[in-house]
Image 1 (cartoon, rainbow, N blue to C red):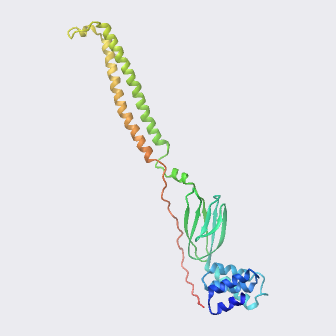
Image 2 (cartoon, rainbow, N blue to C red):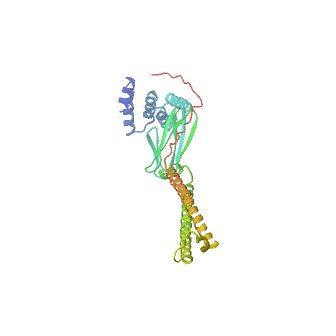
Image 3 (tube, one colour):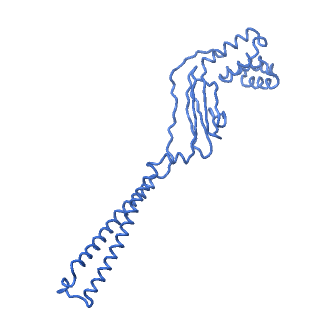
Length: 282
């Protein structure tokens, strides 16, 4: 498989050569196979994978590779270190699946640190019943970018989406209810005073009073009771109107303040520098 990979590399059929080298490594993890695989990966633009392969090729010194190829691997590795960046991701949410460019890295709680191409990357964290997060992370050459992802439940996000504190609409409803209840009590008191006035009126005029002598039959105290009952009824009606209006406003505020999901702003890291790297193709 190693020799077939070499033949395909010379044609070149790089993707097929990589398959042969990968298959050969399942039988013998020889530094020379890692070295050839790294060259193929480098040609395919798989810089991160090539770096890992070069490191494994250099693991046992220059003996297995020979001086020339050992030095070549060291040089290539140093060049890759200058063109790659590092990404450090942490997530403490239990059960959250964290992915980098669509590839699952780990399931939280956990962390990841690895090399990445100097370009923009998509980092996502997902868990059922939690608000997913998606971040665009741009890494420059030789730069290390850190990202901390902590998911919150959908109910928590909905609570944060309220326009006001939850108690405020209920406070308005409470005030309206209190005014309406007080008006009801005042209305009941006015009715009692009206009944008391009627009873007193009947006592003064058991057989009825004519218009000519009605004022002489009803004293000032009885008139004051009638006036008080009338004012109480007027205040009660006014209270019904005011309390009902406040109560209706509280119900509207309660509806407007219901939990809702807010649109989440996606933060992105911007490129802070541009690096131009000339390279020679095969």
